[in-house]
Image (cartoon, rainbow, N blue to C red; front, side):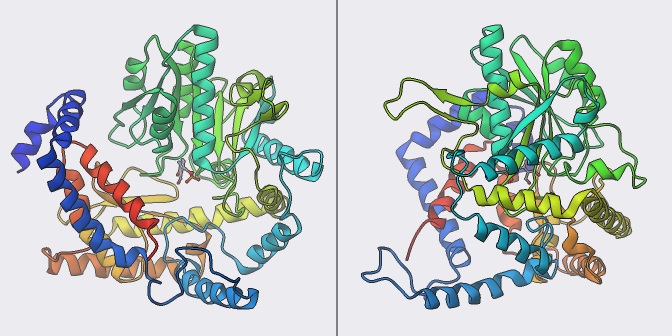
Amino acid sequence: MSKLNAALGRINPKLAARVERGLRRVPFVRNLLEQQYSSIVGDLDASLHPYRGRLPSYPRLPKTGRSRADILAEMEMLQAEEQQRWRDGYVSGAVYHGDAGHIDFLNRVYALNAQSNPLHFDLWPSTVKYEAEIVAMTAHMLGAGETSGPIVGTVTSGGTESILLAMRAYRDRARAERGIERAQIVAPASAHAAFDKAAQYFGIELVRVPVGADYRADVGAMAAAIGEQTGALVGSAPSFPHGAVDPIPELAELAQARGVGLHVDACLGGFVLPFARGLGYDLPDFDFRLAGVTSMSADTHKYGYAAKGTSVVLYRGEELRRFQYYAVADWPGGLYFSPTFAGSRPGALSAACWAAMVSLGEDGYRSAAARILATANWIKFWVAQIPELVVLGDPLFVIAFASPTLDIYRVLDAMTHRGWSLNGLHRPAAVHLCVTLRHTEPGVAQRFIDDLRAAVAEVKANPSTTGGMAPVYGMAAAMPMHGVVEDMLKRVVDALYRVE
Ligand SMILES: Cc1ncc(COP(=O)(O)O)c(C=O)c1O
């Protein structure tokens, strides 16, 4: 099997994709695949819909409305059940703050602003103020005070939207200024999937460049990948899979020398890294202090400790930002414009984001970063002491680990059985823990290491246990062509939307 995979791995990927598409159209192959998809998704179904049979289900509107008290009671019960895992620190990423007092405060702010919609800036000028200040505060934290020109941006709905908007801006700038129809973006293999999404949505060519042995962008290989059509390079600070901070100073120099943009994806690091150096961690510049950095994404709804649904995209100069806007002058509905993808937007989320930032202040973010970085450093040290595991690269707060001797996905499954929700990674096979404030609570980091040691020992004693995510990742790794796995993932999305 591995010889076959190695041989298949040498096939030109474009040719393989074409063969695969052709094969999948053959009725016999299609039927076989559909049977496989149904069987795999069928096995997952119960775990995707744990409330089936337990709670009333609504495939259509109820004839008469249900009482508010009844609805609230049901939701309170579900919330109490579902918050247990993240509140007790069993979850990688996902809830970055999670303190009850902070959540109550944001909920009060949301309630006060629940009707607000920044599309109607005349009705809610308070939201306009909040959004402008969110952008200004984030820009200042990321070096705006030390640049010659202005750093500007907008509030978006999340990291993915920030990245999509920036990529579209580079595409349209390349079109307008260089006559390039299909712009190219050069990104390290470790850059977030949102860059692939942008490429698919907007007809951009994404060139993925393998990372170095330290899991950081390989600057020489990135330089070699730049071509006539390149609109921008990408670097992460840090990357989602391995928590590696790319060599941004070198990428910025390269971008400037070749006359292209550089987007620094600081969705994860935007509110942690600005404080890391002051706390004694070794970190080169990664933001607008470097002249070659032309745009950044920083997620307020991660380490900015806002409620879910906001992020910030920043640009060096208003001209580049204008390529992300939408405006139409000949629509019968009137003169229309919007800064981001959505039309109407939840102003309450921007209000809550502003309130989170202003209530924490620099001191609040610095002390949160100190706790997170110290805890992550401790976890990294003790993971590395487990003889069967290796930590990938030298991360700051996203700790990825692999095993040269064990199936790491079985370790992931054994951790899941102990209540943990960690992230499975592949290419290479690994698992990561994204350390948040939840893990800085007393006893949580120690429990992680104790459980990880026990999980490793269990897999070592029974290396051939079946079930869980191990076979799914095994299949994805064995599949030289991705289309089949992607088709299967889309069937999982279908299943998520199925009502009983
Ligand atoms: C580095 C990085 N970029 C982008 C994103 C996408 O963010 P979102 O899930 O908010 O769309 C993530 C999410 O984890 C990330 O870690």
